[in-house]
Length: 141
Image (cartoon, rainbow, N blue to C red):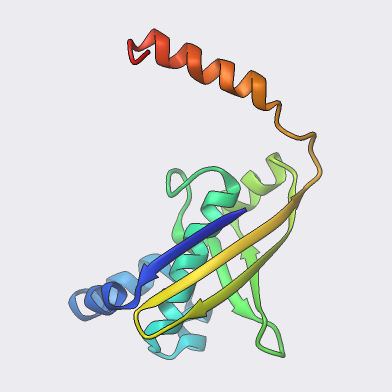
C-alpha cells in the first residue's frame, strides 16, 4: 500500500518557476500530453508516483520519477505502468496488480495505491528485532 497527498498550489509554483525542467524530470511525454497543463491532474499524478514509491518500499531513493507512469484506460480509470528500476523492484518483491485511485479538491491532490504480493508475508517480529538491534548499535536505545 501507499498513499500520498500534495498541495496543488505547490505544484503550480514549481510549474511557474521551472515548467520544462519539472515536466521533463517528473512526467513521461504521454502524461504531459494527457494532462495538457491541468495542474490538478499533474499534482494527482505526482502524488500517485509518491504513493507507488511507498508501495515499492523505496521512497524516492533509487527510482526515477518517470519510471512510474500514470495513464488512463479508455474509460478514464488511472492505471500504473512501471518501467526500469521501478519494474525491477516490483518484480523483486513480487508486487503485481498495482491499482491507483486519484482525487483532488481545490487545494489538495491525493493518491492511494494498492498492490498484491506473491511473496510470503513479512516476518514482523524478526523485522522489529533487526530494527531494535540497529538502534542499539547506534546508541539510540
